[in-house]
Length: 157
Image (cartoon, rainbow, N blue to C red; front, side, top):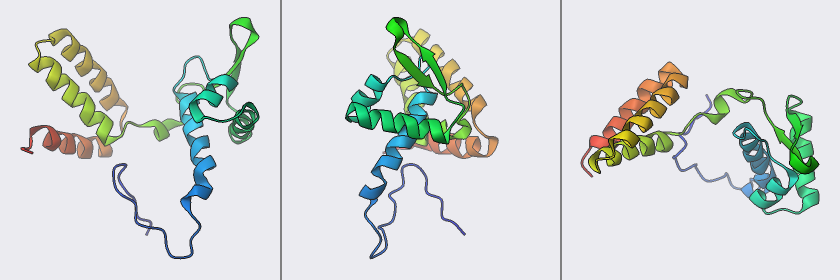
């Protein structure tokens, strides 16, 4: 049975003789790039990739090409001045982009802080946003997350 770790869990150390995680750094960058392309309505340019990942132009092009080979549904569009941008159509990556428990808890804390500070308009706007996020989550995860969030907000420290 495969062990599943929550996003905030500390992973166990690698077994003796196992290659360093440094070897997988570029794959992690490619996954992050795919998520950034999913989360951007405009898309990302080669210059954006260079800047966000601290890589050369040629490396940014190779990263983009790797994403295009793995995900043929990536859209290319021309921006102003003929600059090219790449993005995933909304929803393409599905559940890979679900919010983490920490992000949900931060949202709920922000609502509580806004209410405490008397900024009711912001609190209501955040509440509506969190309701939309909850509507997108799988039902089984929602129950677990809401329970954990409730305890993180209302439990004494």
